Amino acid sequence: MTEVLVYTSPGCPDCAAVKRYLAEHDVAFEERDVSRPGVAEEAKARYGVRVAPITVIDGEASYGTFASQKPRLDAAFGQSA
Image 1: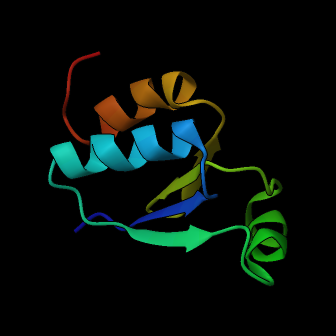
Image 2 (image 1 turned 45 degrees about the vertical axis):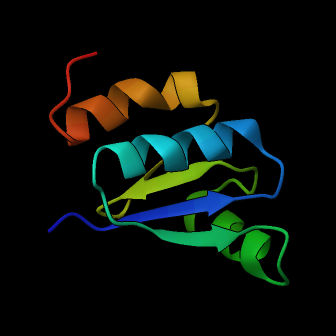
């Protein structure tokens, strides 16, 4: 089973789009809010960035806008771009 972790922040439209995409494709994921104490630092230490959204699929992180992440999401979950 694919492990998916999404770092998000409140009010972030790209974060909402990533979560909506995963939900629409029945992909279970863990969410971590970078506005909570220590979470942004954790993301920076593990993946080199601390700006949400960060989507981690089986240990490999991507970040940036939803549009920039969508091709990787499509590839990971068998969807055509």
